[in-house]
Image 1 (cartoon, rainbow, N blue to C red):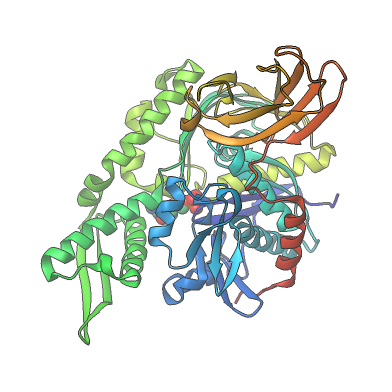
Image 2 (cartoon, rainbow, N blue to C red):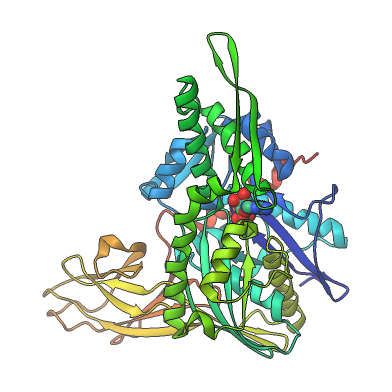
Length: 530
Ligand code: AMP
């Protein structure tokens, strides 16, 4: 292990990297002094790739070769709602590959979402390595608390493709709590309200000196700042249609320009009562260039997104319910994510929790800082195991229930959501027919008792046991969730002791060989920033 280890907040919209240098946790800036780096990857041609704020400029100029918000489709299957949605607004093609996995077609070349994320992680690694002048490979990468196993596995693969040794993945809110409370000897119960570009999570934590314990967590992986942008975009598209009879929905580039302008306007609305959305050449109508210009007030914007903000409190109710607490039982509320700068969000949070949120931490950087603190503790203590960080303990929970398929399309609960991790549970399985040669085990995450309403993590056949009458074989299957929230499954024939071990991964996840191949391909591409 090297001297330094980094903490990476791999965000939907922006990413951020932290490191503990000379005992002080800091966020690493790029050469222009930016601490936040757009999670955008641009392929200008040849073997070159541009990542970050420089790449963001190409979203409009060269949309076919510029990937943004890849986190929304990372670890998702081709038939999922998120992939379908991305297919409607992304200029590049999203194609289905084996077992419902997806690939992005850019300039005739196929990329997996993991590979795109890996370019971002590699860029973060390079920034930090240059900063501390050491080739850093050890990292803690953060994920939304509500990420399922497929998404976590895809994040881990991204890290490996980027040549990182991922010491652990920790949940974003947990990282934020570490940055808030580490070394401060607090005795507090806090809520971490994390509204990012694409996801919302609420975690309730108890900080007791150096113990950081998650009491309950809940989330919505389809709710974030991008949805606010979308609302404003739709609102202005409709207004423009009424005023000019031009439907901007018909032109992808116009729509993209408007979406970007709306994101900028939204950010400005967190400090100004009204802003002008102005795009000089939004559309060319029979050779005539048309512009768009509208004033949008905070009040108007608020009315467009109030229901989205209210949706976050349903999630808060759920997380508090799991922790058996009321909003007023908390000593503090920590805000994470850019959209929490919006006055509407802050006021609503204050109303719900009955106290003003803590605004002393930078909501864009707090996660990377916490991850850096954790990464540093892991290499200092020399042990990336057991949840121990230096003198502090991190006790997280699994956000989703783990289930197995039974018969008739139903599932049975194995590990309930909000159970502390790491955890292990065993079950005995048997054959249901005489002469049955194999037992099929399908593993799901979700809260429904119907197979199709949960997310399939993986399936495997256990065979090689002595064939006999139904009910004779006795196979013990052990399910475990590790400190990174990853699910592992081991099966054992109780008669022969024959053991099979596997990490549950959908067959659409990347194979070991593929990770190595993509890592080599990525390392061979020139990161050409600036
Ligand atoms: P993240 O996923 O944490 O990178 O969150 C990025 C999201 O924060 C995007 O939707 C941004 O538009 C949004 N954002 C960043 N700054 C602000 C701001 N000042 N006001 C409102 N939203 C912001």
